[in-house]
Length: 262
Image (cartoon, rainbow, N blue to C red; front, side, top):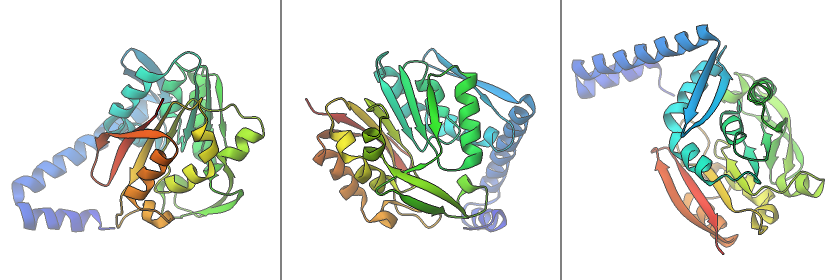
């Protein structure tokens, strides 16, 4: 990954001083906003009349800024689809942004996050927002095993960690409620998640799946690092009886909505 200095030099060489100045100003504005919300210790988000409040200490302030900038289209659609009887599965819940908002509409939230510090933050945010749900400290995968997460991933805080992994189908077999709506965001491992919960997703009760799909990139894993391709992964939803549409395309990744066919 290029350093900030190298990126600045490239911007100056390719686009000139004005572009470099604009880039520097945007960076300073983002840093100032992050510092402001970190000092405030909490932040409330409102999307289409649904509110949730989050702890902003530590890395959470930056994470929430990224969520707010990049996830609103998907969250708005999610909130429009949720019903009071729904069970929402949040696979790759991070600090509980989607879960805390969805929990204001859904009957029950089952969130899954493998890294201990984000699990703690997610549990605190669900409790703060009085969500009826729980955060499970595990990865959702295509097999029951122990995984070692990439030390370069922001999710680990910079160090390799070993985490338990479970299949979604196995979790349902053991008594977790069948999801009616799900969200998947797992840094390129989405093919493994879908493979491990294919029966659960194919169940007639599962109406909608939202997924962040990661295209190949130099800076982080993609679906190709997990035995699939973008087209092949989207086809796996169709094979399970879903129609697939793109909600937002952000370049390196994009959000899709898979809706069960009647």
